[in-house]
Length: 225
Image (cartoon, rainbow, N blue to C red; front, side, top):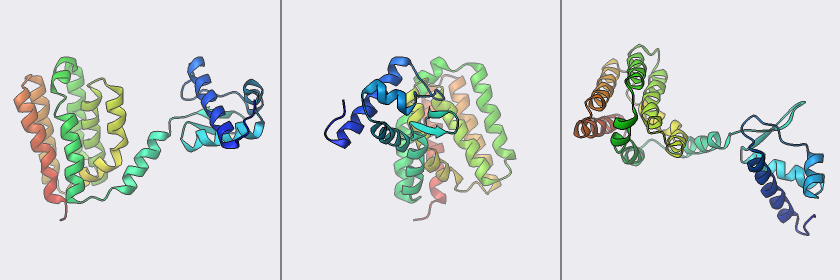
């Protein structure tokens, strides 16, 4: 039944749509029922359902597609990444904040990675690392650098950690871009990555933490005061 308060009515329909998504086990790419169907289902007006759809779209949960209808998406992470990218200035303080976050995550991954990573996974990371030297641009090199570290994070098998790390991708890549136009810098990055992988192969926690800390500190020289 329609609430006397329009905002409350829209919020209620949004809540019911979210409940419907969970109950039906709908995921990204699945099509939601039409406005007419939802209005009947929730005993609401089409206008209220339409406003609820707009709310879902604003949060990146759904989008309208011609001849299909409202489709579930996962664009909220893109919105968060854009926000971080727009808001973050690359300064010394920003560098230390972001690298501090990475220390709290990546440097503490050793135990779980030593247990979970297979030789195949390590070989895949080695392959990505090797391509950094042949990158055609600094931007591509920073993408590959991020990919290497994302593979380490994903190797922990924690979805929330991977999603959080992914949200910071634009900021982390901007930090990684510093100095990437210099061949010597690329060689240093590849060498440091190799040391990290070797520490994992050797199951050497001290070496892993040492090389990761050294690696995360290296880019500071390229950040302007």
